[in-house]
Length: 57
Image 1 (cartoon, rainbow, N blue to C red):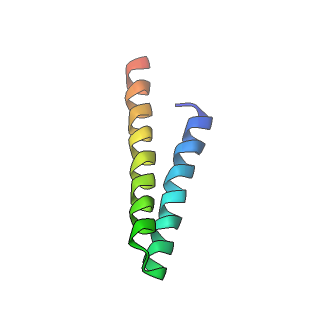
Image 2: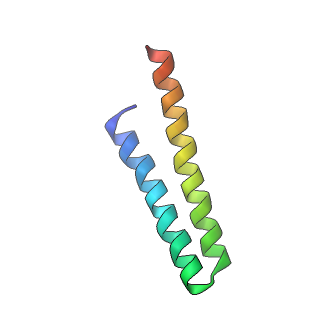
């Protein structure tokens, strides 16, 4: 996995965490759900990169 991909995926996860926390703090369920989705997207991309790396070896 390239460093750029790692940074981008971590950014998605961090953005999701911030949105989710903000949504919980202000009682905004939509924002909280968006945060969970962003976190899941980052996790899924990272898992895909790990699979690609495994097949490169």
